[in-house]
Amino acid sequence: MRIIIAKDYKEMGKKAANMIASQIILKPESVVGFATGETPVGMYKELVNLYKLGSLETGKITTFNLDEYYGLSQDNPQSYAYYMHENLFKHIHIESSRIHLPDGMSTDIEIECARYEEKIYKAGGIDLQVLGIGRNGHIGFNEPDVKFEARTHMVELDQDTIAANARFFPSMKEVPKQAISMGIKTIMGARKILLLAAGIEKASAIYDAIYGKITPELPASILQLHPDVTMILEEKAASLLTAAQEKEIREFAV
Image (cartoon, rainbow, N blue to C red):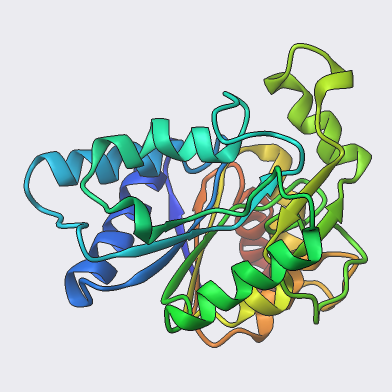
């Protein structure tokens, strides 16, 4: 596991965008898994900047998104399809047939999840998967106690996740309680994983994901078993790591 600490949110976004750009430059037909939420917004801005500067060609990539709220249509401003369009897809050249997101309006979830997995398989698997991390250690919408062997599936969102997402909705009643998410097994099948985290509220989850016991109670802990994970952390999100390192140095010196 490779850990990079960025001095602030902007630097985190730049470093993450550069890593994705490098992947695409080395393999123009890369399959990239994207994440949503507040954390990767800066990364998407930097990717768009690279594209506009002519430093990045995206025409051959294929994309898969981690998750989507169940019950929200793609034109709903709170859907992740809408988020991706506004933050990235409308600003770069990429064929719509190469963009894949779970269908939050599907009437048959089992078929939809199987369809999504089949598309990932036919694309050759994911080369680079971007992740965020929840305060409770979730990755994608895989909440604590979700089975590690799960592939794309329907998730019942934890109250902590619902409360964290409430700020994006007019009222708590309108916050979706379910989502379709890539499962842990699907995420772990990616050849490379890039996890981003910013803010002091993520510090505990980051520390436990790296140093804690591997357990479904903290889904991100499974990343300890992946052969190629890079974490790019803003200083506050990395604060418990740096404190632990400083403590080890002091103890060693004594």
